[in-house]
Amino acid sequence: VKNQLSDLGEDRLVEHLVGLLEADGPRREDVRVGAGDDCAVIACGGRGEDLLFKTDAVIEGVHYLPTDDPGAVGAKAINRAISDIAAMGGRPTHALLTLACPNNVSVDSITLFYRGCVAAARRFDIAVVGGDTAGLPDRNAAAMFSVSLIGGVPAGKAVLRSGARCGDTLYVTGALGGSLSSGRHLSFTPRVEAGCWLRDQGVNAMMDLSDGLGIDLPRMAHASGCGFVIDPDDLPLHAGCTVADAMGDGEDYELLIASAVQLPARCPDGLPITRIGAMAPRGEGHACEGGWEHFK
Amino acid sequence: VKNQLSDLGEDRLVEHLVGLLEADGPRREDVRVGAGDDCAVIACGGRGEDLLFKTDAVIEGVHYLPTDDPGAVGAKAINRAISDIAAMGGRPTHALLTLACPNNVSVDSITLFYRGCVAAARRFDIAVVGGDTAGLPDRNAAAMFSVSLIGGVPAGKAVLRSGARCGDTLYVTGALGGSLSSGRHLSFTPRVEAGCWLRDQGVNAMMDLSDGLGIDLPRMAHASGCGFVIDPDDLPLHAGCTVADAMGDGEDYELLIASAVQLPARCPDGLPITRIGAMAPRGEGHACEGGWEHFK
Image (cartoon, rainbow over all chains, first blue to last red):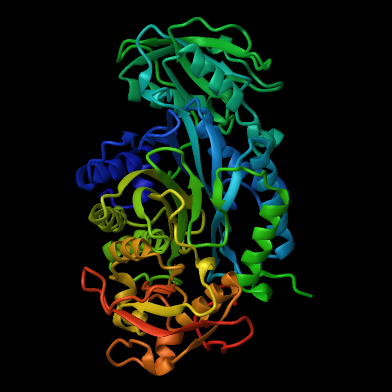
C-alpha cells in the first residue's frame, strides 16, 4: 500500500497535489501559469508586466548544516527563490521571510542569517517587506527558513519549462557538479541577468538546475512532451568533477535552456553557455541517471 | 545576557528583525508599507490597485494538534493569511502552499489537508498557484504548513494599524474569547466582506485579532502613537466566556477598528460591530492583560 510520502517521491507527490488544486480550485482568468513550473505567473494588468510568485524553503540538516555560516545560509535561502524567478526570465522585486526555529536559537545567529539574506536581496534590488516568525515546540527541532518572492516579467514573455520543442538545442549556463563538496551551494549567484537576456533572445524553454541535470532535464522533457539526447562529453564540468557529479550532485542553480535560436558561447555578462544536446521526439533519447529527489 | 529568542519575545524579535531590514535593505519607491503591519503593501501600478503580500505558518503542536481534522487545519492555515488581507481592507487573489513534514506522514492526511485548504481558498475565489514541499529529516518532527498570499486593495486605500488617532472610537466585529476551547480557531470565517466595507466607510485603522485583544490593541496603539481606554463591560463575549478570555485567549480573527466615523451596530452582511472604547493620548489609558506572545 502506497500510503506515506516516502512511497510517492517528490514528483508524484507534486503531481498528486497539483491534481487536487486543479480539481477543486476556482478558475481565475488572470492565472497564466499555475503550479508545476519554476514560478506561478499572474496577469497583473499594470505596467505591461506579469507578476511572478514563488516560495521556497531551506531546512537545517537537509539544505544546510548547523555548522554552516548563518549569513551564507540566509543568502542561500533567498538566492534559491531568486534562481526560480531568473529561470522564468524575470526580475525579483519583493520578499517575505518566514523563520521557524526552537526558542533556544541564539539571537546572534538569527541576526547573521537575516543580514546574509538582506544583503543577497539588496544585490538584486529586492525589498524584504515582512514575514513571519514561529517558535517550534521541540528544542531539538530542525530550523526552517522559507522565502516568498514576487517579481515581474514583460507580459506574456515568461519562459516556461513546458515550451521546448523537438529539435531544440539544449544548453546550460556555467558549469555543473560538486556544488555541495565545494560549498558552492551556499555561495552561488542566481542567473538573473542571463535569464533576462535569454528571454529576450526568444528561447523556447528554461528552468533552473536545482536537483541535478539527471532529474531536471527529464522534468523539462516531460513538461514539454519531448524526449531528449545529451552528449555527456559535452557537459561543462567544474574542476575535479565527473559526468556523474554533473548529472547527480544537484544544487548547481545554473539555467537549462531549450532553444531553436542558436546561442553564442557566452552571455553579454561573460557567463558561459554550453550546448549539451537536443530535444528529441517523445520516447526517444535516453533517461538520465542520478539527481536528487526529495521524500525518497 | 539576552541571547536566545525566548529572552526577546515575539514583539522585540520582530522589532529587531525589522530594524535589520530597514538598515540594510534597498529603498524601493513602490513599497507603500513594509514589515510591521498585517500585510505588506506594494504599489502595483495596474488596475488602480495596490498589491497586498502576506505569509503565515501553522505548526503542529502550536497552532493545531495531531488529532485535529486535517481538512480543518488546511482551512485554518489559509484562513489566517486571508484574515490579514481582510484587515487591510483588501481581497485575496492567489496563494502558494508550503508543506514541510516527515516522510512518514500519510498521503491521505496530506490530501485531506490540501482539500480543506483549497476549499477555503475557493470560498474567496483564491487560486492556489503552486508551493513547495520539503521532507523533514526527523520522523518525529512537527509538521509545518506555510501559506503565501497576495491580494489587492484600491490604490492608497489599505487600512493600516498605524492610522488610529487620539479620540477615535474603538470597535470589534463579532464576539471574542474561547476560540481554542470551542474549536472556533479551526472553523472561523475571515472578515473579508466586513473589511472591504469598513475600508469604504473610511475607518482610520484596522487589524485582525490573532493574539488576543490584550496584546493586539497595545500593538495598534503603539503603531499609532496613541494610548487607549476600553470598557471591559462592553466587550462582546462568546457564550460562557469571561472578559479575561476575551482579552487573552487569542485566535478570534475578528477585526479591531479605530474610527472617527460612527459605525452602525452591524455590517451589511449582518456581522455585529461593537463599540469597546476609544483611542487616548499617548501614555494615557491602561494596558491590557493577557493575550498570546510567541517565543516566550
